[in-house]
Image (cartoon, rainbow, N blue to C red; front, side, top):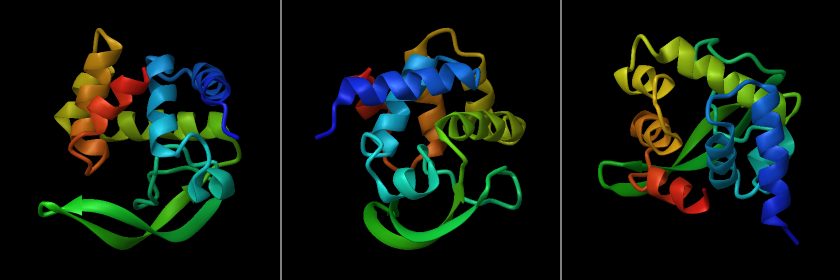
Length: 144
């Protein structure tokens, strides 16, 4: 049985150790993205955020190929993807921050998220690009 408070505590500790901004909110993002740490991606790759392999921008310990559901052109579809494998949860949070920083020049919402004053503002801005789920930010805030 999943004990959600334990998953959040573990994720929050990993986020803090990785110096992730707004670690409590980041832990809630990880809980949503990873199905409370129970997704295949979390279990086999320590990938808590659905971080895809993308032109060498992710530092990990390998790749895991598997399908995912994406919200494209107004509907949910299944697509194949390659995902970053991380050594542990802390590395997943560190990799997530690496991506946000690396892409902040390319995506204004990431740059703004890194300057956010509140956790809610952070997750709203990050969610504009991080996920294809139009309700992602609201779902994360519900967990928070």
